[in-house]
Amino acid sequence: MPDPSAVDAAAVFTGLLADLREEGRELEALVTGLPGPAWTRPTPAPRWSVAHQIAHLHWTDRAALLSLTDAGAFARMVDQALKSPESFVDEGAEEGAALAPAELLDRWREGRAALESALAAASPDARFPWYGPPMKAASMASARLMETWAHGQDVADALGVRRTPTARLRHVARIGVRARDYAYAVRGLPAPEGEFRIELTAPDGDVVWTYGPADAPQRITGPALDFCLLVTQRAHRADLGLTATGPDADRWLGIAQAFAGPAGPGREPQDRGARDREAPPGAPGGTPRTATGGTVRGTAR
Image (cartoon, rainbow, N blue to C red; front, top):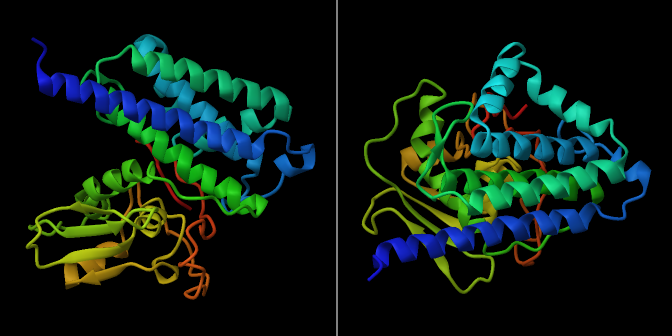
């Protein structure tokens, strides 16, 4: 008989890949049919247009695909990046943004399909090289979903679109929770010894996603959407409905990040504390770009 735990892990991975596919499709639908000038519209990331955001996702998808299928080619890509560690992310985005919108869209669509196939063929626990420590296939899929969602928020903000949050945010929230100690380490700060209790209201309002011990004295509560905007640095804490209990939990909300690499300055407060938190589709504005998902820099500027 098959190992039930293995069957469950496979099912979870299959569901994750389905969510990654749907996240990409949602963003693709947002940009499909845009007139040419809309692709040059600035996003909250300095000097990055809508085209830069899509080009960056395509570039990172390609890196992930090479990691999964051609370790030698991926190593050469890393070597090239190390020659210009401060600019290679921007250079990759610039290259793609220079393409005609239709060609960029086609390349991104084809790249997503190829990456999905490569991930589906991998064992969830298999490790593959990355710009830091190797990543499991499941972690890589989660990271790609997080980055697609975060950069999709930048695109939505540029286009003035309010996206409807979905249960796919649980993947983003989970990464944000697990990256707690990293947020301290990247700033040279000691991490708190105990776990926090985190209770996030899912987008449907009927479920609460919980992490950490139920009796933990320090905790974070609030909407899952707001937590995901915070840890991807797509909104400032002052503009979100998150509550911290305890000094360590309170400090974490000021430094939290779900992406790898140096800490960025985050986003300036928008003085929108009274934004439409009650409206389920609500999603505040974006923030400067982050190379989420474990790139070398991962900087939010």
